[in-house]
Image (tube, rainbow, N blue to C red):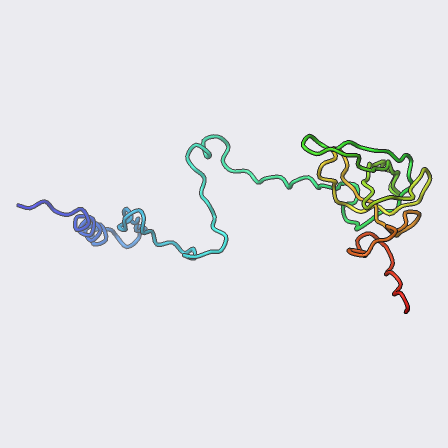
Amino acid sequence: MPPIPSRTLLHALRRLTLSNTPKRLPIIPTTRLTPFPYTTSSKRSFSSTPSHNATLNQVRTKGRSTQKARRPRSPATVGRPALKGVCLKVGITKPKKPNSGQRKTAKVRLSSGRVISAYIPGEGHTVQQHSVVLVRGGRSQDCPGVRYHLVRGVGDLGGVVGRVTARSKYGSKKPKAASA
């Protein structure tokens, strides 16, 4: 006699249990008939953001937890595009290892009360102690601890003199056309 396939056996058992049970008792379903990879779930088969299941080791050790947001690059200006401040000290910072030079920086007390270190962009500047400046976010990539930029052409920090290209970035006026 050939062996009975397991699926046929389960169907036969289910028919027997359904026919022999009284009407009052609830019917308890038997084991799932579909193989494991082909589950019939009510979830959508496609999603742009898949929900990943945790591994057994992750479940064993506290499971998955939500990640914290990264801290902001310029924390003093969070929620504001720029802040006004007063210069406390103007100085020079040396850049990090592969680079060399002298980066112009200023210690600024913001209107919020925080004291920060800001980079002065462009060639030449008119900033001195007690100058009123506008500070925006954005770090200087090769200066450690300098996370802010001063805005050229606003307050006591004038635009770059003799600037022809990228004038909007450095706050300089359009050069007058030479009349012939």
